[in-house]
Image (tube, rainbow, N blue to C red; front, side, top):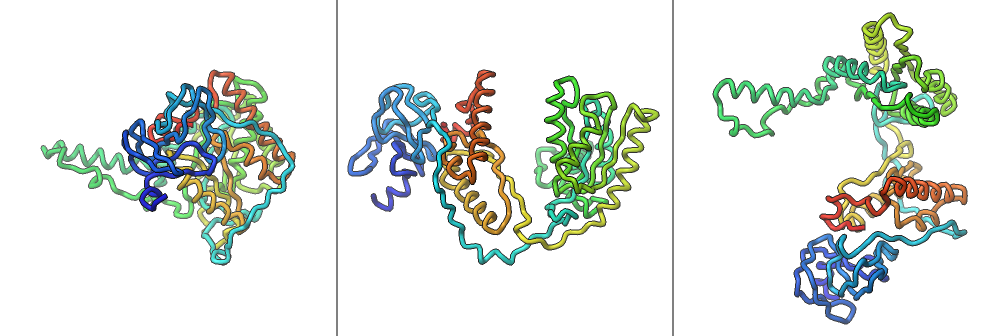
Length: 408
């Protein structure tokens, strides 16, 4: 295959029976592939795929060397792969005893590198320094909203300030009789919120509004507690304010117990305010603001200092994926993850539905059978719950994904 052809299309794996268009290709064009000439049956936009063989109904479609779909109708060589001629399919998977060997990349160039983080007493290092507000029940959401407005507006954390400034400038121009259409958005409201912060070492105040804590099953509240506890124990968090109604399923005592079970050495500042023990809602809000303000003055004394890259925990997640992601961004993120892990850091792959079709590869990489079986159970439970509500992995691609070539 000529160098010019290599720039036009790509076969990702030798077993694949579809090619990825690297640039726009057009109906009637001749593609030279593996000693034969393929005439394109459709226009093929960059990022999309086309078939290099004829397929019968239910014929298997392979990409990355694995099953990604089957034909809903007979398709011709050179035809565009679309949601009309393909349906989602993936190979069966199971635990098997394989000796997978991971090859560590050379990290000698990064071993002495550091990042400036917030060191916690348990040895973990945060990349940010946050104060957290946690309601134990949805009944406290309104109180959180009131407190959020009060603190954010006055302490310089309100990200809407620049938009208020933008609107104010437009209003002034309108009142002065100026032509509004002559203003460009980039010329207005360009204030930097970070420069207005009162507490320079506090990166933000986060409010975890939710719709749980009561009204559902006790199991729901227990799961919620586990989730909220993980936020509280996060190294990016320096202090917590808890708002409780008092009579809800998720009791403050249960939350604090779960927190201690997760981290017996937990010693961050925790403020608890229970509405049914307060004189009034007004008093609850004032007390929470006062004590939280005091807490903010304390965590503002914590400053960033160098930490080795081994202290990093990086979460990766998809966003705006298209037909090129699997041959560009994903390998780059994967290699970066290998570098970080080789340096002693951790990388978390959070959005597990994206792993549909790659299950066997992930299973083979698990370091033990219990971990592999846990992953298998996770994928199958999710699939079952999705089907129970009339959905499934086949509905994972969004319209934006599909438009840019990510069909299955």
